[in-house]
Each structure stands twice: as C-alpha cells, then as structure tokens.
Image 1 (cartoon, rainbow, N blue to C red):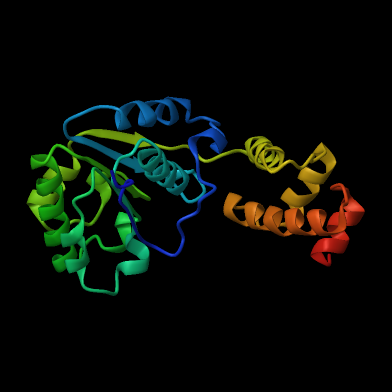
Image 2: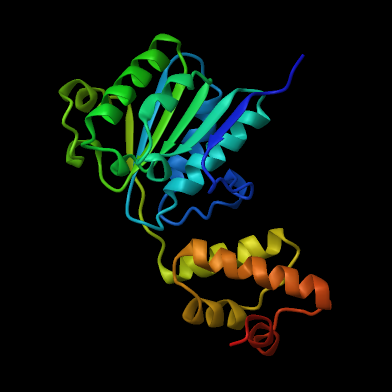
Length: 231
C-alpha cells in the first residue's frame, strides 16, 4: 500500500509546525478541536482568522502534517504566494484535507473566486476537509462572488488571538526545549527585545542559535548569543 499523498504549493511550509509545539495562549479551544476534526468523516470546513502572528499558519500547517501522519492525503497552499498566477492549479486539489492559507490575497479576484467556489463544492460533495485562513472573518472579506461569500459563512469560524509578550517567551522556550536547548529566562527576554517581535522571526533566530550551539558545544547565554548573532 502506498503512503499518504502530500501536495505543497508553497515554499513556506515548515516541517516544525506541529500541534505539539503550538503555544496555546488564548487559543486553547481550536487547537484541541482541529485534531479531533481530522478524525471525523464527512465534509468539514474551518475558517481561522486573526491578525498576523496569531498562529493561523502554524495551525494550518500542523493540520496538514497531522493529516499525513494519520495516513490521509493532504495539500497545503499559500494563496499569497500564488495570487499572481492562474487559479487553475486549484483544480488538482482533491486530497482528503486541503489547507488554504491567506485567502485575503485572492479575495476580489474573479478568476480565483470562481476556482475557490468550485473547489469548495467539490470537497463538500466528496466529504473531505477544507481549512482556510485570513486576516479577517468571512463577512469582512471583499468577496465579489455571492455564492462564494455564502459558502465561506458555513462551518466553524474561529478568531485567533495574538500572543502577549509572556506567551511569546513561553513559545520560544518551548521550541528551544524541543530542540534540546536550555534557554534561561534572561536569554529569552534578551532575544524578544532584540529580535523581530513576530514569532516567525524569533524562531528563525532560534534556528541560527541552534546551529551555532551545536557547532561550538556552547550553552545559550547572553554573551554567546551576542557572539553567534554578531550583536
């Protein structure tokens, strides 16, 4: 028997995005609910929205990876990356779990809206799962196609809350611990105030420190961080 089919139409798909390393913050309900929905049969539709750095993409990619781990077929597409291209690429999406990131990027573009409308109907008829993210809720998107607007209003819509600084510190320390790194509080706070404040930027900085720590066999201290990052 062949393995699960995966399709990523994005260069920004991160293997590290898992439910186990998603810091809940003010979003515990949806983080628990999504894995349960992946286990269910029939058509499921979830719309996640919130500001940048609220964890939308992480949860979407975690759903993609979890689906593959369960032996399901899955696809992840960053619409922001694909907005300047033809939408016909959506015609090939018939996986059991389809994840569409950044709907804002194609909202208001007639050809993309038509393709999304047909994709929604196809997945619904086939009893599959569709997950979508955007910066705002379905009713506030500049959707021109009425039938698509009505479809987007179906299903579970969940607003994600952005993380406070203390939550970002906890998320950074959790990611470090999962890499086998011990990160003292003073180092985490130093990084928070010197690195880009978005979690993606903090995690990118952690990647650099992880490589440097492994190469030089050094613990994470503020002097070592300064040296490794040339600050």
